[in-house]
Every structure is written in structure tokens, then in C-alpha cells.
Length: 341
Ligand SMILES: *Cc1c(COP(=O)(O)O)cnc(C)c1O
Image (cartoon, rainbow, N blue to C red; front, side, top):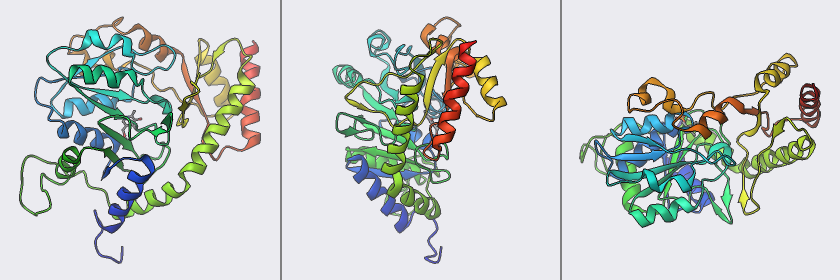
């Protein structure tokens, strides 16, 4: 604060540098939120009115709202039953001449299906990863942030690392990076008042960057703790018939922003846990195509059966790095109790 430069100064530059290093990407551009990171990414690839962008209907609303903010048309494709991420096998049917990009969401920390990259390449379209929930996840040795053409991260307090509010875009493409930088700062490049195009105020403050830098230092420790907690849950809950646990392929590092079980007894389980002061979350209670501002594109109930079914069964239990051993034991015990009945 004493530096007098409270926005987009040395600390933001340092956060970008360290973040790019962590992800293994060439460029990182700090912004004000995950939503603005998605909007900048869509701007960078030149989305125009009428362009179609394929995404999952089973995600946080910001993924699809960003498409509307960029004047694009959201085109939903159903998810895979196992990963709950976009199903690459259903993708090609949805691609046409208007398709410009795919926003692949790495839900709960599960990296999106890498077959999507090949399909996109074949059709000459771009892949943007929504990695708001997947900071620290990996496919083989490659981190999220280095898998797609552009990746959008969020530092909202519920994510793997936070800066209060904040976001980041990573890319290996110099031109994309430059367009993101310009769009976040009113369409200006290095020279002030040299407006090249429409822009926005999506800048990050120095205060947010300092919080982010400190979080980055602790990131590996926090993520490893999440993974450890998830492993304990997977071991202790595996014999309960009424619940399905997340299955993670061996080449994947899942950073467990959420530990999400599936159960047909969701309401009952959630109510029981809440009575014992165990908070759970439903991410997400309704598939996006069933909300009015997306339904107007012609979507109907039944269009995406896997997403619709998942929205009735998913339940995320606490997995954060501050969980105590005794708390994990209590959660396991209470789930066992309710699921026996
Ligand atoms: C949190 C989140 C966002 C939005 O991030 P904000 O920082 O809240 O704007 C976008 N997509 C997904 C999948 C998210 O979980």
C-alpha cells in the first residue's frame, strides 16, 4: 500500500510470473475474477455475435454466462457419467460451421477429457479450460493451465487458492496473452489512452496479488492435504452400497476442490449431516439448460439426461485442508449411520 500503486503494480506482475511458473505456461494474466478470466479468453480468440461455443450444462453458471457476455451462443453437450465432465464422444455431433470454441470445465478438480484437444484441432477450433476448480490438478505431468489454448482460473475463497476476489488466465500464445491484457484494461495496450478496441475493467489489485502470492507458496501443501483427505474418504466409505465415490484414473492428479459423492438418498444424507453440524454442498442442483436465460435457446427438459440425473444425486462433503482427523472420522461415522438405514 505504501508503494502508492494499488492496482496492477509490482505485486500483480510477480503473482503472474510465479503463477505461470507453477502451471508451466508461458504467460499468465491476472484479472479480477474467474468470470472475467473466461470473458477475456473468449475475447482473445475473437468471438463474435452468432459464434457457437460448446460447453457443459453441469457447471457453475459463470461458465455459460461468460459466453453470453462475449455475445456468443452457448451450445450444451452432455457430460460423461463417470467424470461428470464434458463427454468427448458426444462432442463431434455438436460441432458445425458456427462452432468457434469449446469451454471444457475441469469440474471439482478433475481435468477435462484430453480427447477434446484432438477433436478441436481436427475441426480448427479453440479449447478454453475452465479450471476455476482445478488449480494444481495434472494430466500425467502437465498441470491444468498448460493443457488448453487458454485456461481460466478463479481465486474466489472456495477455490484451491484465493486472493479474496481474483482470477488468472494462462496461455502459451503471445497474441492471446496480449489481447487478454488489453481487454482487462479498457482496451489499452502499453500506451495509455491508445484504445484499440472495446475493453473492460478486469484489473487485479496489489492487495489481492499479495494474498495470492502467499497462497501460492502454500499451494502444494494445501493440495496434498486435500488429496490425503480424499484418499481417507475413499478408503473408509468404499463399502457403503448407497453411495458412489469419485473414481480417478491413475494418470490424473485430482486436486479435490470438491469431494463429491453420488447417492439417491441425497436429501436424507444431507439433512442428517447438517443436524450434526456437517455442512455439505450440492454442485449443482440444476442443469444450466433448464434456467430461463439458457432455455430461450430452445433447450428442454430431457435434452441432457446424464447432467439432469447427476444434479439430483451429487453431494460434496468437506475435504478442505483444515479438516481435522477427528472431523473426518465424524463425517465417515455419520454417513455410515444414515446409509445403513
Ligand atoms: C467459481 C467458478 C467460476 C467463476 O469464478 P468467479 O471468480 O466467482 O467469477 C467459473 N467457473 C467455475 C466452474 C467455477 O467454479
